[in-house]
Length: 596
Image 1 (spheres, rainbow, N blue to C red):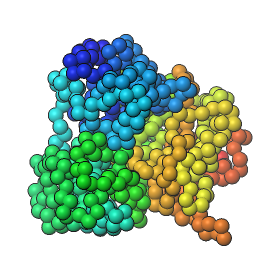
Image 2 (image 1 turned 45 degrees about the vertical axis):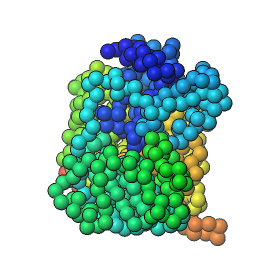
Image 3 (image 1 turned 135 degrees about the vertical axis):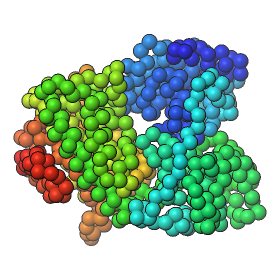
Image 4 (image 1 turned 60 degrees about the vertical axis):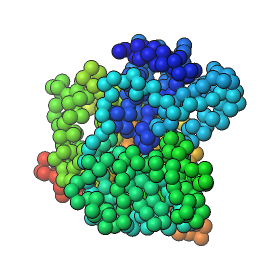
């Protein structure tokens, strides 16, 4: 079926079931960013493959809502369909609840599958729809009725990850969660988010692309810890090990019944703690009315965002290995650029081969973004056999990539120019680099939020009336999700302060439609700085070790402080990585890290 055929089939089902509009999100029952094929309903319906979007179908219209990272991609992939792109963040563009509220009236019913919607999103819809008397039906999965060749549920095996990598046992982590439950006067916490569950129980899996997690739920009380998972995924002996640690293993689909029948006789306060952003509405509605639901960011999310010394040292080891892979790929690109043999796909494949040689390599941390020229302006571009183009020396080539190692997660972007950049290209590149450097050098008092630092990365662009439509920094896990909360650095307000031990990305960019894209990204760790009479201060430590291209720099635009920072960073890269290089790599690295 074509996209339009699927939309029409949906409309027929909607009419039969009395549904005025149907909403299809990008998530799964665990509100994941990357989802297993079984839950890729929005992609199946629309043909849009970006990781974040929502599709709404009515009897006469179809829309897709997405943010600035995917504007160009949506415009390209929705050609030939009746789906209209709604570009969130632009002036005059309503979100889909507002749009639906303007379209419908009292008695109309908006349908969706509550298993794949976060609690907070549904609450917002209910609040919006109440104004016009619009009703919801959250127990309807129309996609399952239409998707005849729907992929099966993921069946990847579970494996343990030891304290030599995590720095803490699962017993210690569960005890910390229980201490926090006591502080919150709660009896239980329900975990739906896969990264929180895998971090808590020191396990990993193969169920989701790029994120080493497994499909599961968890329920932790002051006395019990229950992991809900397909038992066929368990390696021999793991259930016995868990049982010996007072951890109960139950089948994945038993979670609903356990939530419905939470035993009030075992509790003191009948309080259940959940994260409304990362818990699904289906389980939320299963909680007995005798229980009070306390909402907040998952306890485990806060705990795992603060990396211990073992984790930080592991990430640093991963960064050195990752730099070796980047060096090998960079040298290979330079050797082959004149032959016309390089393509976006060949670079992606070669870089993955370089990484796979490294010790403790697990896989990629996300689908590599390799954008030559105008493709680089598509912020989350994904090259395919149909779209891949050749790499040339005429303009910029943007390469955003990362890997999962058992000792850490990497995410790095470098923008290459293999020829002579134009004055415009040099100016754009230098302004992005200056923002990257200024954020790297920031010193800030304890309690500072990422939104308060975001301007440091954007100021030089704003001074020239330029802007990029994505966040400057996201949290990063440790052999876990490459995008991790609760911390971030972006224009939007985020109440979570940056704390020592957190890892965030630093990735300002600039994108000229149909011309090129520029982004420079390192991962940085928050660490303690100095204490003054005014406050305790924090600063950033660069974790990523890889040269930043210097041939597109317009040096006269940089301050001496910025030049000193860049030279110092390059010296660190050379000092830490050169002992791991062969003779030809050392010579190459010395040239790439020379002082400017």
